[in-house]
Amino acid sequence: MADPAITIDGLHYHYPNTKKEALIDANLTINQGEFVAVIGKTGSGKSTLVSLIDGLLQPTAGRLNVTGVEITPTTKQAQLSSIHHHVGFVFQFPEQQLFAETVADDIAFGPRNLGWSEEKITASVDEALQLVNLPQEFKTHSPFALSGGQMRRVAIAGVLATKPAILILDEPTAGLDNQATNDLLKLVDQVNQQGTTVIMVTHQMEQVAEHAGRVLVMDHGKIIANTTPKKLFNNGEQLAAFSLSLPIPVAVAHSLKHDGIHLQDNEPLTMAALADQLAMAMRGKTDE
Amino acid sequence: MAGIRVNNLTFTYPNQERPVLKDINIDIAPASWTAIIGHNGSGKSTLVRLIDGLLIPDKGTIEVNGINVDENSLGLIHQQIGFVFQNPENQFVGATVADDVAFGLENRRVPPAEMKKRIHHSLEMVGMLDYQDAEPVNLSGGQKQRVALAGVLSLMPQVIILDEATSMLDPLARQEILSLLTELRSKQNISIISITHDINEIELADETIILDEARVAKQGPTKEVLKDGALLDKIGVGLPAGQQLKQLLAQRGINVPDNYFSLEEIKQWLTQQLQ
Image (tube, rainbow over all chains, first blue to last red; front, side):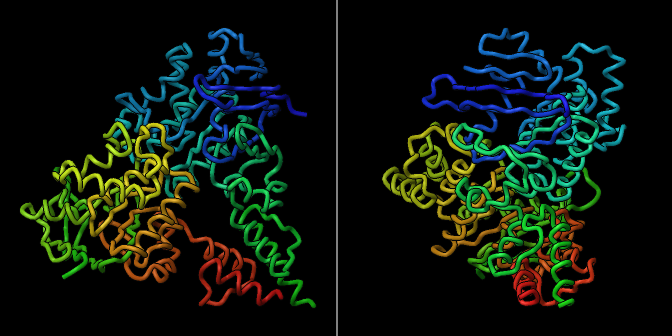
């Protein structure tokens, strides 16, 4: 059994001056090295949950433990901030937060804030650039002269440069074209395979199916499902009730099932898996 | 001559050697929906800015509903065309939703009584009448884009240009905006030009134009254009789901006949084969 990276017990959060709680009695354990997707409608509590894990918000009740740092409603600010040594947070449209004159300075901002030596900072910038697949000569360029997809990779390099044990991404592919989306998800997979725990907020069911090992569904401030993508997509009606859709390959399999055609695996998570199932069914048909 | 005609258009940005658009010829019919797609930097946004007269071509001409686009006709052109941009955050000037819609009307010096009517009507069209006194900051991304659209509609344009207007929205909000546009178009005589990467949005268009390497790489009925999987992949839109599945099936020795393209069509074919 892997070590838990995050444990959450009876966690609540209530934004000041609002009527309803944004997060209600969340209980959760995430193990080191997992890839967890968080889905749910806008306003369902996804961002609140990940902001608590990043120490950006302090719980109003309950407790959480993030890589050994214990957080309760009475935890001091310094303790809360120490989470940033372990957690990297890629916000929505992170390229909007680029600010420095050069790509290298922008990426170095996080490590510098953590008080690292110049030597260590330089090495981490080089490594992060390589990780996001941008050439080293970009270091001296202005981040604002780059394309949208490249700017986003610079912003993500800035987070990766701090070598977080936990990487949180809030809709990292929003607004990117297909190619840039695939490149970015490949990068996230790679970071995850190197042992980083990944928590990704997304609206794209195909991304949940293809990348996550586990999925949390949030609705009205509650975690209403904590399961594997396969099990979640097994129940299309329940998903529709949450205003969520099926990933395309699962939708095709379910639609065929509706027409009386049963594939061996009714929840193929990728197009390739669907094609495998269909090929198997076709062969079965010709053998009859 | 109604519609939009672009003839032999070439445009180069100042201090650049290569034209971003070269020898472009396009016809857009009145009351049609046209998708313009292409890589980032392929000249999509430049093209629609030229159509709106915000940029002046090096060579060639543009006509919008019979009006030649040049420095003298800008006022007339801007009355014909409304823009909705990508980022809903950057489009707000008013303190309330109604104020925001009023901004464009005030600029046009529309009389107050008429203005009130138009604000009411345009907010009603986008389903945001209940929010007229709300502050824009309290709206969701989809609601903000609906208000931006109301601002454009209040000016009663002939052509609405959407420059990646749904790309920052979540799938539900995107669907909301696209249904709204579909509905608007069925009720009004409006042309829609949408710059997009989203395959669902492309599929709504009657016609699709692909820009690649400064030229029109393909234009025609959307259904036909979407058959060119290799080109779609090249420009970053990616292969439509139907063609992806078709390719994967071919790799497994199952050849879906040529005339089945969309996912729906392939599903029908599979059902026939497997029943």
